[in-house]
Length: 568
Image 1 (spheres, rainbow, N blue to C red):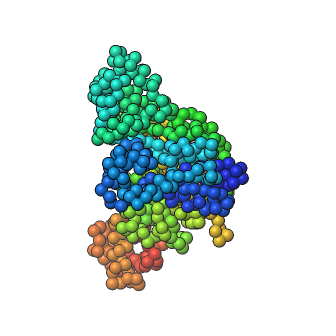
Image 2 (image 1 turned 90 degrees about the horizontal axis):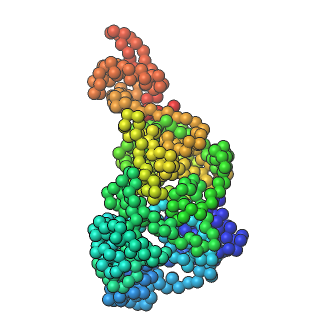
Image 3 (image 1 turned 90 degrees about the vertical axis):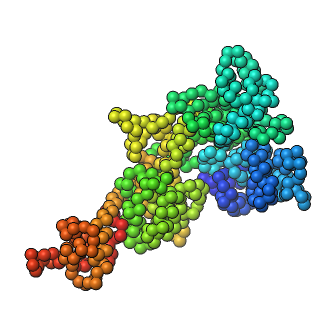
């Protein structure tokens, strides 16, 4: 059992109330099962967009409901004040209370374990007097990302009714906020901002078309923005909150939940990047305890505890996120070889785009089941799978995954250049020390996490798995049990083999170079070289005789010719 199970076991052993936050509803069922096994009283926290009967039923009012919700008004507030917001009850309230509101009526103290999504950590009732476990890194769950127009309209709307600030609208604030004549009044306004005052609750503003509950926070950010060396802007807003803005005017505001209200918080992450956890949860109070203290212990854990046998190719980075670099022949050569050698088809983890490419080609016949990186978080899909392949590395947009997180920490992160002024790429790609740690978190650690998805659960007397890794993007301390080289056939080779296998003399005849060349797009001399290569691989043999002592080729096992290439 893994770290998630042990969190539930801890609750049973200690009798302490526990709240678990995780990534998606599909994972709740596993926690429910564990709670039942431990005889713990548990509750899955009600979620507005999942429980409310107005959502997803094609009601005309739904768009306005979602608009309000996106503006920062809570689901409960929308229901309680429906008459004020819409001049009528919501469809879900016509025959009595909404199911969502009914499920809100519970006492957290009556439950040993509460289970919910990362976002629900913003509700203090789920934190106070309880212990909290955050299962895996919450990524962008605590980001608020308005468009530039949404942000500036919200600020302008706020300034119209905020008498404490001497600015008429966004443009006026942007132009004059750092003037000395406004320094004192701006300073007083910032001092009056408490932790919750970033949420605007004034009714008159909530009914205006560009209202946003976070308008005070956006206004504060606009005042505080400082320019970093990479043209990003950065603002600290107190209580762990940070705002950044890209050179393209894309806003991100980090609003950590009030975790300080909990008795204690534990972050469950097998491959953590501690700096990102500190940013995401607010302030610098995380104590990092490594279960495995050294690279040797980590390697031993992979080999002896998880019983993983890792076979890694020399494929290079293979960034597959966009799908533009997918090498079908190389991937097919590896998969075909594994299928032939193991006698069974492997499960595959790759990018969503690569997975779609495979589904439209013959490669699919060598794959048992495939999944993409983005759908793995918390998944046990391959827990009993003994043969797996990781193909390509994830490479999310650098602006979001690396540069933005650097900006949130107040650092200017960007790609480095070599001595000739060229931007570094491939395995030489570098963002500097801190930036490289951020990049490794979304690339190398994701590949390692994918490897560890296989074979984690014993079944039928077996444990562990053999995992082929077709990318060089593994953490440096991981040592492969075997190194592989994947070679693909040339287009000419594929044509030659096809010409022989489709000829009338197949499979027991003989073929001369000229006969083969006549059925391909290449000449006699190149055919001769390719046939010699096939002979070296053991697919054909030859005799010489007749006019000019010509080569006469005959089949040995060309029916077993690997379509895509070979692995050595």
